[in-house]
Image (cartoon, rainbow, N blue to C red):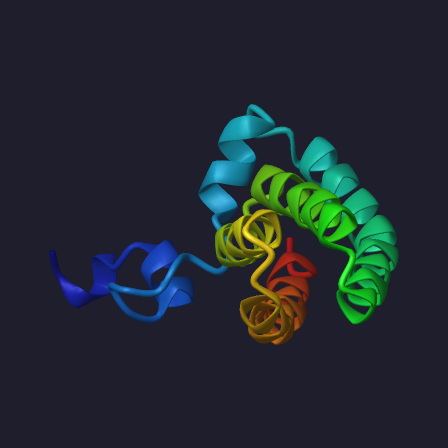
Length: 127
């Protein structure tokens, strides 16, 4: 493959071992290339996700493993739907850590989720 033909997703990916930050191609496949639908999904995500992250953070502080698992699962699905592969992956790790009641892992993953959300937000605002 020539340098001029590098897949756009590789540029967002960064390295071969990191999960994809934003799968724009996947988002448009799921929306059957309906740009308005993709933008609507992104708008809903951007409107609802900050509150979801706030709730997750609150439950992390309280060590409420059931609600941590619930909100991590919600973030995992919502971010996967809009193509936020890295955020979805981090949320999945959080969900598993909550099920296993591994608080130290949860705290570490929480900072990663916040970072991944900020990165994803910057990518999806360009759609």
